[in-house]
Length: 557
Image 1 (cartoon, rainbow, N blue to C red):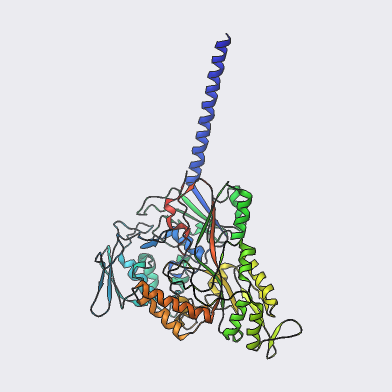
Image 2 (cartoon, rainbow, N blue to C red):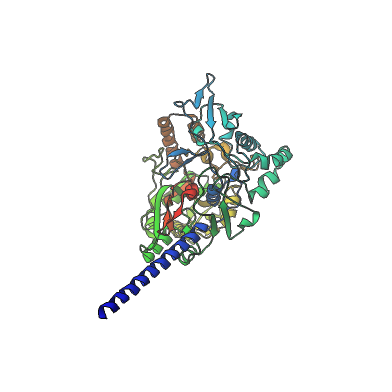
């Protein structure tokens, strides 16, 4: 009986184990099913617009990475790949032809079956329409540098786009912008000859754009301002459907607590946690979550407004840089994980020049230069010139503690050399949508450029790209820098196909830039994002390509 009883006990034990395993399996599958329904990304900012031709914020780039599939795109290894097209044109594959008159003809062949999210075919006519709209001077695009180099675009058929460039252009292989002609064409025709294009540039399409990517908005209600944007799988996407049925982009100031509580599934690498916040979070969380640290082409800096009389003298600008303990800043705030910058291009960029003039922390040198420029120290501890106090205002984005900490350190450093600094930060949508774009900052604007492997300073350092009311705020030379030789260099670089020659010009340009200092180079930022261990294929790029570049490949295992 004892043995029989033992067998019965074992039998019940075995059934119990199987029951527990089944319940665990079902619970796991239920959790996976919930995960596959919705994925939430947390960030501290939201876009000011979703019009793809008017991008000015990284928050917008992240959403557009879900809604728009580009012609070509860089991956996280900085390799360029065809996306909507069958291949990237080149001389070797016959896609590029040099004409006797110096013009260049590039032929793009699109993949079969491309559609917009409403099922309407995507064709070369959409690219031609976008090019024509961008050329219209009344349309407030950031820059027309690329589109103005094109002589004409033609559609040979529904899958073939032929682009004729007026002259050789180094970045012909980067693809072209596009918007749906069947949606925006009628609006454009109505407004193209009017003094302003209000509906075309500021209308409903900004809030509810139609794209061609793996995810789409289904109604205007998908964007709740100040809270979230929800996107659903696009049934007309040409590629494989994403693992997640919906992806929500949530604006929140409580990133860590929302992540730990499960309200968000990942923290965006570009506009999420600052590096100090992430380091502190990881210290407390240990190995419970996956922390992604990505170095690359993110350049934190402070633009001078060079139209301000106080900042026109380069000795003043040099003094202000000498007066900041940038090495101490990255050590104190970022545990030496950020790298102090000395020019406008990061070290990983092919045009980086390691021999530019550098400005180590030297308050004595800073004071000497300010004295030479006529700013004399008075008994109250501040400097004056012609009765005017040397008092500056710095502006940046709110909801970014790291930038607030940087501002406080600079305040303290500059007070030691007799310079007063006041802080006036704004919400990101205002700062990027109005203050920088329209050069409304009186003295200083702190933010980051998200660069690409081929960034060349053309839009940020040439004279024609100084935004103004006259050019409808086109360009990104927010400093207003005017230097004849630098202007010539940065205008010439895009016309040179030989990378070695472009590098030589970029390095010369960096020497001029570092001497003139139209901006204060601070440091190269490290991207930080956080995910759960079960998320696969989350691949930050470390540059301007957003985390959503491969969202259709994300999976929760």
